[in-house]
Amino acid sequence: MKNLKLLVNIRHSLSDIEGSQLFTVASSDDYSNNIFKRSGYVFVYNEGEIFAITPVEGTCIHIASIKDQYKEKTAAASMFYNGVLNSLNIALEMGDILTIPLQDDLSLMQERIQCVVMIGPGIQVAAISPDTESIVFLAGNNSLIVMTGNFDHVNHTDLLISDKGEQEMVNVGWGKKETQFHGSEGKAAAKKKLTNGGIANDSILTDQNQKPNISWRGDSTLFAVSYLCKLKNYFKVKIFDKTGRLQCTSEFLPGLESVLSWRPTGLIALSQRLPNKHVICFMEKNGLKHGDFTLPSNLKVLELSWNCESTILSAVCVDESANQPCVLIWTTANYHWYLKQRLNLCSPVVALH
Image 1 (tube, helix red, strand yellow):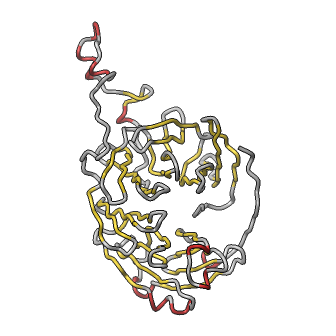
Image 2 (cartoon, one colour):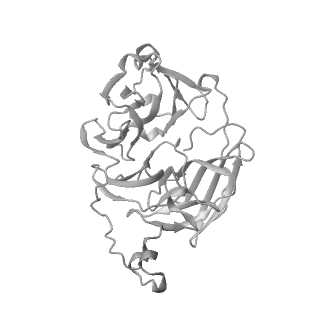
Image 3 (tube, one colour):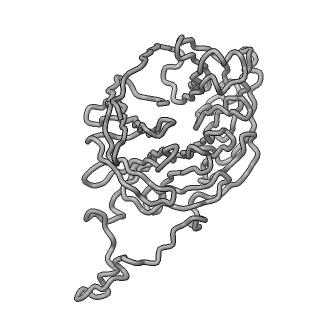
């Protein structure tokens, strides 16, 4: 693949959105209303205030506010554009899901804010499918809830139950240490705790402050959820179909972190911190690891993202040695990953699209 070249660089300084933590981007093709046909919009949520920004002109338009209704409970878990309802949706951590219809007259948006669903245990994370026909919510009690784009209930399940998935691999033990002849070591050798690189599995701890993540496959038929097994203190991944039926659970991967991104036409990318290195690893839809490549040292991965053609992988990171935010961009050829760009930044990255 040819080297990447910078096509356009646009920078705007907007004081109204300083400190914002939720952004969502939608192109002009997503909208039927004339006001949104002129260009794509970046929607911003900032402590109860909602803004729309035109990326090219840098115009910042205040759409609505929920501060009067929710007072101090305005923390949001997710924000996304809903193509089924032609609306902007905000999932609040306290459990309410708000919808704001996108109208030609911006002044009407404040009046049309609705709470369409209430999830009692609260919301940790939410994600809408690429075709905008399905929405997944992970509640505060680790219940996984699947709804249609119209917010009709489809399915719900407890993420922590140990049920087998419909496509779960059956392990008959061939080649495992427990089924092999151990010679003079005797049967006791089969009972020794398995290790990874000389480190006992349960001694590789993960950062429990990491939040779970949800990522959809490009065709909207499957999604993956990363979650923390608190009793065993490590992250795992479960893969579901679009109706919320469990397909499989990932194998044990020591040092697995919560960030993940499903390549639109391929494997799931994840961050894994091993005793001697930090890698981006890949997982098949059956939950098995399939290759990795090593990251530069001292990096903490905050977000992974693919381009729509599945040819470029990007990572939002922090260089912990210098406390500097950065974005890394890779391409692949002949099963090798090439670091094409490293962008060192002066302020944290909130969203990457």
